[in-house]
Image: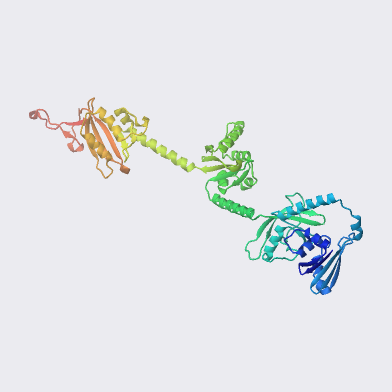
Length: 505
């Protein structure tokens, strides 16, 4: 087989030589096709042929001593004449069945088409890193790397893009490694996932783009770091357990609230171990029995998965925690620990002050009712309930001034003062204290005292006035008491010193 090459272009060739080149995939130069064919037997062919122009003629022996093939090259005025000489003995003794030859050709075409059409970058190289074969995807990527994508022909062999690729051992997952390739005029390198294996004395490599995976991992890592920084400043303790119920994430507030050491939490304890540790540190309500405690843990986990767990833990130390369980994707569950001791203390204090205020109101003999600025009844005392026969605290819904006046008017005589009382309560501006007198249907008089309170509200107090009774007192100086002098019925028999009487209701 004889080839005539002008640079990388085939000028002429024998019939067998053309048949040999046509068996290789098209789309590259004839010289590349020839090198791909010959490098399996003559691995140093491109390097040795570089000396042909200066030497004039070369003879290259096959690398395998058992292979008697050789290449004879001559330089003729800028044209290289290359003759591939096969072993005559081997060619005459080798007989191939035509049917087997056709089957092998069809299989070769299938394998070649699979390799060329594959979206993966596939190449084969020697131990020294010399590329002996590559598919079209790799060749296109190599042209992009060299900046020769616009050139119709590229020299063989193509550039070695993955310089750091090493042949790993072990499982297929272990033989896969990630490599970054820095292309010219690009700021960031491109990432590839490379799988390597051995074929005889050479290595075969498959690469696929991993830029999307790297970007996703970077975004996820940045997101986790952002969440971590956010969680670090939260006053709420956070503990996230994965689907295996092992601690996956926690924040510094959890260690402050529970007293658990970061070393223990970093070991990723299970949910049961985590709660047991809380129990040992008395950061959880003490159960009555341990068996029931274990059952309670299972119920807690199930409720957290459903998103319904929320309890208030009153600790022996006097602190109060609100613990909430929330489900997370992929079977994970999160627990939030909030210290609500101050809130509970404030609530209890407020409730105690309300109880004291109500007790003070109940101690008054006047029937007292307090209306807000919107005319709704907010407070009343027990005397009010006794006088009007209605307890606002037991009524369904809120009681307005209209509802309250309906009760009052039902037990009192009709009077034009009711409209004055209603307008006074409905007024939100500055007001002065006023008093009215009403008469009960059952007999007796009422004094109705209206006074403004904070927030535009109104206090109304009812006092029953009974018939006055006169009680004689010892004669004393008139200025000593706020008294009223009662003259004697018979002025002619008036005593020398006046009689003083105190009026008691």
